[in-house]
Image (cartoon, rainbow, N blue to C red; front, side, top):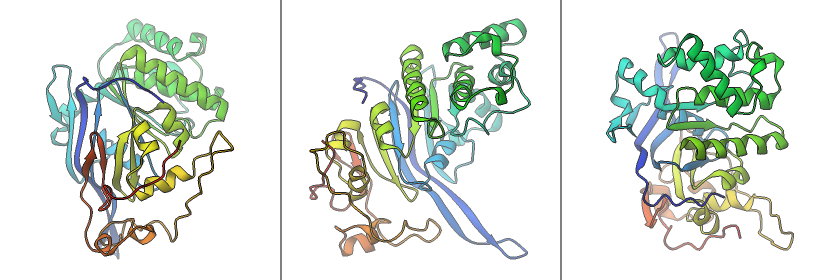
Length: 342
């Protein structure tokens, strides 16, 4: 795992009480009968130069949160504060289309599927060069030279600039996606499960590439994944989501050794152990994941939690800092002794 010292770093991104509710419509007149709470009052922050790993079960809202932060989809409520080059913090949720466009070059995204995220009718030159055109950064010969530089940086051959995506393997396509994200020279990148669709050997190559690029270009990542092994390897800090809510966030080593939320403990128990002598009983959670359209009262996790008491059923836990830099949303976070990974 990363061990960079970010104690003196400034906060690049801060998310406050962010919500994204999708309306449920029924009938001929599309009457709204409820909402799917995909992201529900999420708080987090990321410092310059660090990687925040965002983990949780499929469908918990990780990708929706990442896209809301970039305003690829519109948040329902909340604030997203982003630090610009002049050290001014701007609220992305308050920007109109014109002003938002000027922020785009600072924040980019690497998509999960390297097959569907690239336009099959565009060449590598067109795909990687598009952000440069859209943001009025370069045109003509200058654009082509910049694309050649980016293609070399991500480990591809410049003689393939005129090729189309179908001519490349999955790992090569993801490198094209990385080059496209790097094109406008961003400060912040949302990497949405960038290695989950790749073979294991290729995953390692892409992860190493992302870490090398982070050092070279001083990038800050929000790295979304459901794979705890990948999260542990690449992240400085880890945030855990459950049914649209943030349940825990801490430095990577702290969270893996001393989880403070029962859901995090259950996730860690499923992590494969390199040492066969280390025995940690797998925690099998009862019941099903809560329905984000009709979540339970109080703590969303209480129907599956063996530590739950009446207050968990009645009152939603507050998001609080239990120790320095360790945040969680659990009524008994300070009392429970949960098992981590040695």
